[in-house]
Length: 433
Image (cartoon, rainbow, N blue to C red; front, top):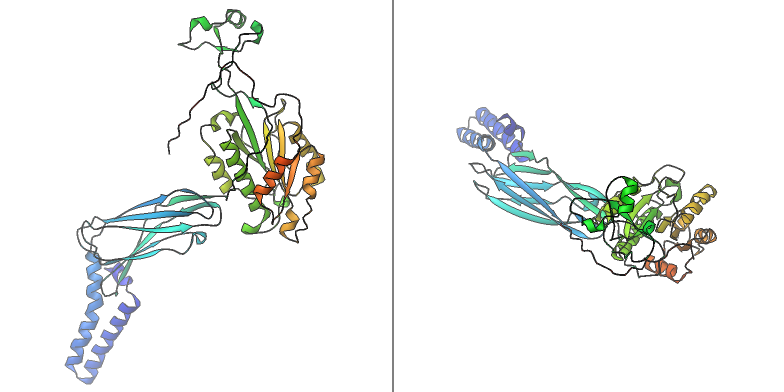
């Protein structure tokens, strides 16, 4: 009852004040009829408070967000399923879902006719032009009596995440270099020619055909070794994003960082669709190159989720721990911002250690000043051996990507295409969502 009295609305407090005033005036003026009116006005909010205090409502909420991964500018649907499991009615229900301001105004609903076993579903749309990971909820519930004199508040604790990925642009297929590297047992390769030393072997596993045992290698290793008749190959690509604070200009969604993140996401989606196994590396580096083989089954969604929450880092230098030391490491597509002279050795090393190097160089100064159309950063990378094109705030990414395709492909030693084989096979990857 104390909680219910504390939930009196402005209308309820006005009724209390009016009732007390009427009773005092009735006593002072000797008007018993006025006192009866005062008692009625005074009793109404008290009875309403007692009614809500004795109500035993148990509300159950199920929130569904579909889909939970959207691109910036796309809409998602939120469904709220509310059930009253209490034994007595609870009056009018005011429902409000908590949202970050970038997702729009907080939705509010007024629900009536609440009783035992009552069930209602409401839906609303949310949309964000800003990438990121947002929490939807919790839901706050306010219960009012039919006269609006008393209001009690409740809140659910659960929230549901929504990930808004960067905007992507469909890119055309252009000639891309790179190397094919070993991955898993996907692509067969014949060993009809060559010496015994050329045969690739692995440890014997239970169930292997004994006719595949390579006795010379077994004698040398001291354990059974079998011929690996299926030599795996996969096409790797690294998308490098320079997200240093000093490399970008502008604020918010109109900054050069947002253009760089969108470009990296578009390139990653395009390369994945072309069959590349893609990893993302930022200025702070990448966790481990040993994760190459697990990325093929996960698709591009985890990479887009990482880009959704990518922000600038204060470090002045580019991390180089991810750069391979054993020769070319597939295709490298770099999205670079402002470069300083101390970055040039790192850029040269990145180009030297990749199978093929492609760069999108942002003219970051154009984001805070007039866009002159000069792409000095792209010219600088071109002198470093990159196939580069510049990107300004007024340029379209698909046109810049097509310009990269019209550029000269740098010749590099080593294989540039998939090794030939006597037979081929296809692999099917099934994803459960």
